[in-house]
Image (cartoon, rainbow, N blue to C red; front, side, top):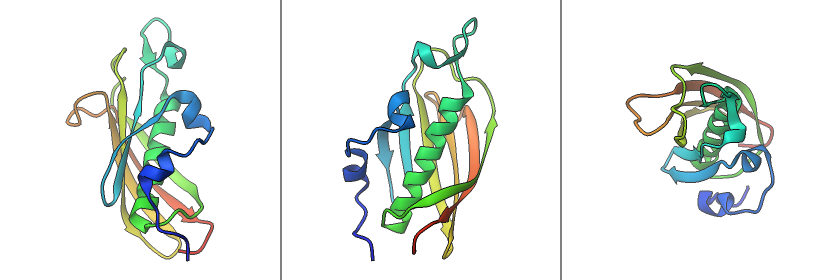
Length: 141
């Protein structure tokens, strides 16, 4: 059985990964959800004329928030793979604003975790994107 999962200890690990390069940082968490923040940076702009962030960093933000939500809900860090992560972009993120991504793990089976979430740039009632997805364990639940 894996050791108990501590989300704060996990996010403090000095890991170098894609999210680290993007500047994604821990924001908050609860019993089955996690939030990360993606600060606005000029090198993440998708269209220079508009100043709007590219969609890729927002997808990465949501994948990381959903993954952490799964480990929190499970109570353990166990390897898993993203089977499906659908993202619906509702509007562009406002230039200059940090995007907050919240992932929620709302159901677990023996081998699959079901997640949903949203990204916003300051008002959760006016989301930038919604996500829904599944993760498959590659270890033992």
